[in-house]
Length: 275
Image (cartoon, rainbow, N blue to C red; front, side, top):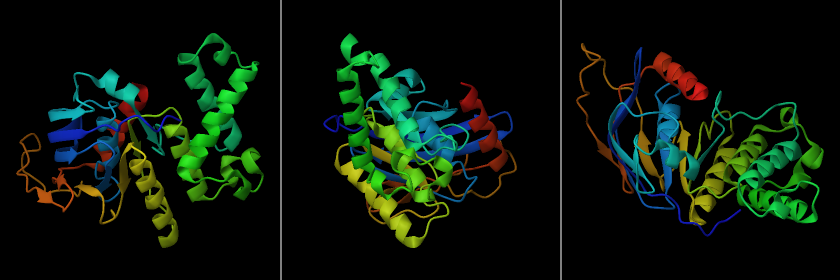
């Protein structure tokens, strides 16, 4: 994994995602430097996942303006997709329960070899390919703090036999393997103990310190993150009218309120999965 690449700066003003049934989120503001830790805070169904997908070029904005690594959204969605990665997003970036950790890692490494490197490094039966694959896998596991020796069967452990925090680390390892400038992770504190949540946030801080911009959705954000809140705003008589925003500010960044709809968020995610 290339940890020398600069992370992606994120700037957004009044962004929102909307589908046929209404708004998934809207009126969100973000200012973050490369290598920042951004926490998208809010209850489940409040548009957190849609915001992650929008910032990684996987869901089109309906209003507002944003840039990721200097590339404007939605105009350069394809470029932003290539510079970013997502992890642990239900229905979009899922682990296969029957596959082992090693199988997931080898498959992800193969995807990178197909688009980069010399012919010798791309031939799966060659020594250089095997060495490059092992190096990528080892670097990704180290970056997320996942020690294969702690798994019941090492890398031969199936996802269904892993603890939740282990599966989360594996998902993030797959996302960072090819050196994205920004990685977005959903539900980082779901069904975790207080100690496990602390471990996960430290993992994400370490990724950010190594230069990757991290955007993580959670019910509660740590105090040292740039906080973006997606708590539902008060209902409005006209769902088509712009929200009367009341931006809030943390000590490390800016956040805005959103008009959200759980059903629309699910619909928007389904659209992203088909895209």
